[in-house]
Length: 496
Image 1 (cartoon, helix red, strand yellow):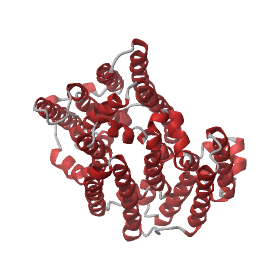
Image 2 (tube, rainbow, N blue to C red; image 1 turned 180 degrees about the horizontal axis):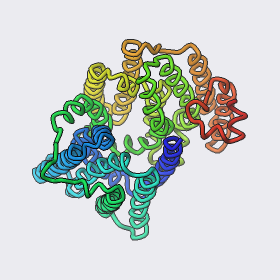
Image 3 (cartoon, rainbow, N blue to C red; image 1 turned 90 degrees about the horizontal axis):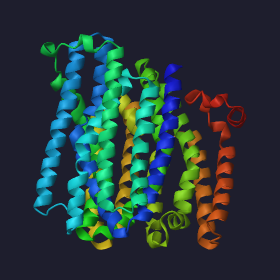
Image 4 (cartoon, one colour; image 1 turned 60 degrees about the horizontal axis):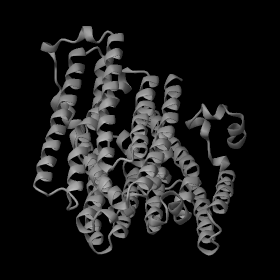
């Protein structure tokens, strides 16, 4: 019960943070010129790449190993894990900063002008800051209460970035100010994290158990667990950074902006997916420990069908109504980005609708198949981007990302049957997918043929989404997956 209440609190925080980040992104796009936003997006992609390299995937290992060591009373090993992971992240992060600054000085990492070089040189400082931030988040998940995580991750962090954007607009500052503000906000958030952890460690009496001379560092075991999962980071790196970098190299800042501007809107299709991850992994792990494959199958398809229906309103908005939404959010100068939003939304929504195939494979320990599939997806994306971005620009990047998302998920879905005995498609889910496909085509046809305006189309999207919900209400067994929501009278009446 405590885990469910804590997960619910974090779910609310995740939803609020995504809303704030979306407002921040829209404000930045509308305030900056298209060239300045493209240069900022390019520099931020470099920083995200640096952060992913700096963490070395240890953020996924540290929470597992530290929790086990703390539970078993192996304090020296627990502190050794903390020291090894954080020290490695700091060292690699600073190395990334040094390499990027050297490349900037040589004129290798920029869009060909002094402003873009300055942007990259400033914002790359986020790489080690965000890497250490990720490590501390993992530690908080082990030792701190959900309330502490909620305050730091979902109140302090978005508030700091929102403050930077407010100052940007109020002062009439430039894009360099924005980059410096992001770095300062990241550092301030890091200080808050350290203060919270210090207080938590003191309250649990952990400082008294620290013996620096007796640290046991399980470096080999940590790396053996982490290295195979780095391929997941590889896919993320390629999908999130290669398109912006290649667009910057072959076409320039404006084409980077045309593509990157719609990514946050397309990413809204992952909102329910990211929220349900909090409850799915521990539930599936408990069933796996009991060897209850039938239970995992039920859990998998219940969550997949729920996410399909719950995510449909956002998919309808970002796919069928992509053109009026893009113009309304980002002004007519970004109208040409609407097809990119539709393609990306399709890829992300299919990722949500097919359920937690990758996480389920990880629960079953099928790391070899995960590695093969991840490498194949990364190579596929690079090949498509290199083939399509030079001649077609942002359209080629959108095709590459959409195709990679779809192929990657199909491969993971096929792996379910191979490694878990979960069927590739559950018969009960097929009806839901057919209803969703029909509703999508109705909205798309109305938009293409009528052009009634965003307000009318929003109302129609709401009506169609309600119809999708009612037609599939008997399949949505929410109480088994998200029991606290079922306490609401209206939800209980809808879902039974």
